Length: 265
Image (cartoon, rainbow, N blue to C red; front, side, top):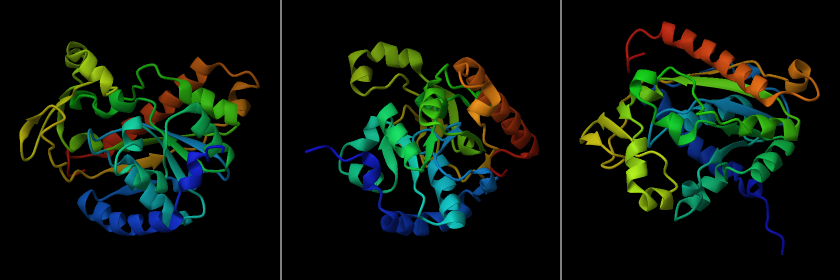
């Protein structure tokens, strides 16, 4: 019997209930704000974003809660996710609320279905970036997202967020620590063992788990990039990636200029 695509596991009723709980909490605790939702085109689209917040990033919950509030639940938001979310007792919950294993096959199915697919090319490298680089777009050279958009024939919708990297003080990604751990880190598919400082435990190397500070988080959805229209029928992947990162960095710089105080916003 053929295996059903992961996108078929999306449960709009459960997702609506979850968003109904999360939305007021995010609007109070993080004073969440998502700008530019009108820039999201109809049909399949790949939302490419920076990733912030360490062990508990709020990018997806904040974006999804505001998107569903505006557009309803007929069009799913799928998030390409790390394998760790796809196993264990919570795996079914994540799959039903739109999280799918990050793979070219899953991305293609979701995009061709007309879904909105969110990807964080920088992954754990980005989400654990030091606080000194909080407002820097850096995907660590990863460009697979461009191929995914080209293969599915969909536009790339750049998005940036600010404030998530202020929920703790991030000291280092801990790449050397991960290398020193060798097989232990490889078994967990971890290339970083980040060090951060937060409350209530102070210094944390992933564990003990600190509670995120109530930093104001603002996200900005930018106009879509039609790859074929801008780069031709045989687009240069490096050029597309450079363009995406350029517009994202410009937008993040603007958000940073608006921000008056850390955490408070």
